[in-house]
Length: 291
Image 1 (spheres, helix red, strand yellow):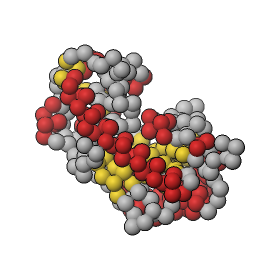
Image 2 (cartoon, helix red, strand yellow):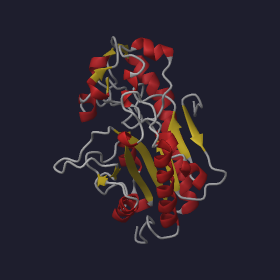
Image 3 (cartoon, helix red, strand yellow):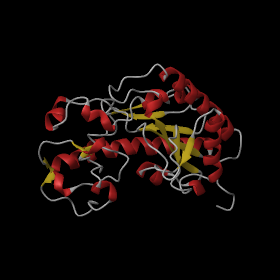
Image 4 (cartoon, one colour):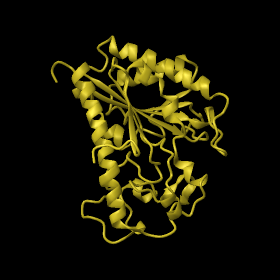
């Protein structure tokens, strides 16, 4: 199985004119009856882990000339921003394969590849799941999703000599930066300088701040598996995770869009346009000649 429009989608521009790839792995909101029947949560509570409407917030990127990969399956069902086999043995009937990572901090927190919890520490499942079902999700969804993402990044890199993956996320409105009490509007994550050049990150932060937003870097979100795995700045492959404060655009109780939603979507479009122009027309992000 290469890719399924039922599981995820690639939105292509008429022509890719900028070296960006947008990815929205957590905004999926198709909850199948079978999945809901497995869950102890109601139809609203199970959505608490979604990055609500993020694919819409960043949709201007496609019209600017960048492809976007987006999930239709929900994060509560499968989290592609994890290693492929970060699995909690307490969730399953049957032994996990030897290559499974069952001791990561994310697994311990209930947020592995097949999550045990949604936000606010709510258990998802009524009962243990056959281990074969979890492994099937990895084979039929996780692996095709990442294969599609790799192809987009590789194509962009070949065409432009560099690529910038923008991993699009949202965060709860009450998130604060430790030690400062600041509640940021955006957090830019570059895995503490390892997934993108410092200049790439600095420009992203500066552009958002110049638009009047409060911006933090790496704290408390530095980027997950996707940012870490695909960011190779020495090769001209950059990855930034961008977290948007949900309190800006969605009612976190009802999960309905606020009146400010169109304004924020337009602002993010302006940011992407300015950022892409700067990256594309400069040497920002190009690998050094010695490398």
